[in-house]
Amino acid sequence: MTDYSKLDHPEILSHIFYPQKETVTPLPPGACDFTVIVEPGVTIGCRFHITDPSAPCILYFHGNGETVSDLDSIGQRYNEAGMNLLVTDYRGYGWSTGQPSVSAMFSDGEILFQESKKWMADNGYTGAFFLMGRSLGSACAIDLAAKFSDEIKGVIIESGFADTLPLACSLGLELNDHDISEDECFNNMAKIALITKPTFILHGALDEIIPAAEAEKLQAFCGAKSKEFQIVPGADHNSIVSVAGNLYFQVIKQFIDKITGVSSWRTRRKAAK
Image (cartoon, rainbow, N blue to C red):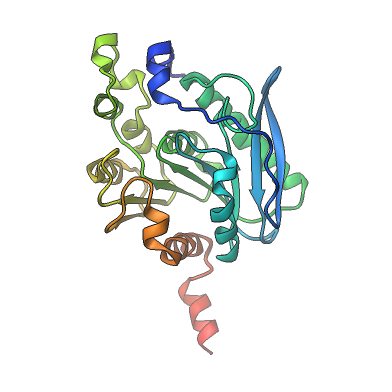
């Protein structure tokens, strides 16, 4: 197990996490909330955007400075495209309790993964299970995909990063001053090499926070035999959905359909008859 204690230094954490607190917000149509206990006295809020119990489900880890409710409108559009979207917060974000840390983010991620799958099984959701992470959330999705490859169908990385040290430097944090190596950081590039399930990486061409070269590294080092890479022209770190529009949801659904066999040549041939 990786020791993330060096990243959990207060000065470093203040640059990694920007928790936004809020009370439980009204549910959008077709959604439900549930909480997961990650340790005594600490709960994580989750919001499940539902279209059909048999539809594929994506467990989604959002970016920094975001909360579960920020994905409400996007969740509905995932539903319209035929996908269930389960969005989870981090400690201290939204109506989740506790204080965020890197160690907790990864340990909580494992609990959220297992508890989400259990909740869906208990409530009759049978669709294929996928992981997705955006920006900071890419670290959670990559970590879980590397650890639980046999329990997922695929993974989607949006605006993700490969190397921690250069990213920290661009954000004004010089980790070399803390005598810390990449192996003691998020280490996404090494972890993604362990992923064997189909992987889809998409990134904004104009991303100034995490340059597109980081996504290229993730693509190059990804251990999956089946992997796709999409650069979105004209999009920056936070505008992929608004720039790509409906195409964003279409390409994600196409990726999922290929994995689940919905768009196999046999299915297409039957549909054409």
